Length: 106
Image 1 (cartoon, one colour):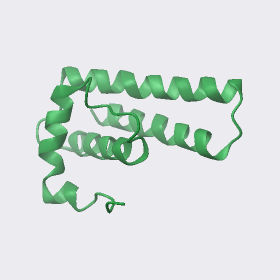
Image 2 (image 1 turned 120 degrees about the vertical axis):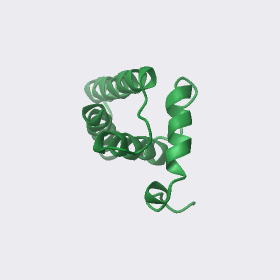
Image 3 (image 1 turned 60 degrees about the vertical axis):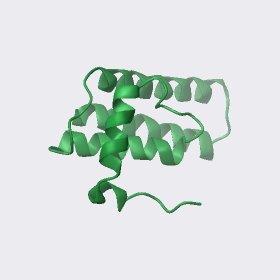
């Protein structure tokens, strides 16, 4: 589970840097598409077996990765295709340990 969360973060952060700081060309667009697909595959895998609570580092890492997606990719909603994962995240994101880390509302 931690590896899936790390993969989401690796792909999402790389994509963000590529999309926001570099001029876009065909190669960079292909790179971004590969990173987006990697995130999608990881979300699909987590949907099949979502974490339970925040009992281990894997669950905490998944919560952090989903929070990052909400923060940096709010325009690309992930919840619609992942209802079990979304329900888990709604539950754990209300816990004080996770809620304190949420960015301030704009």
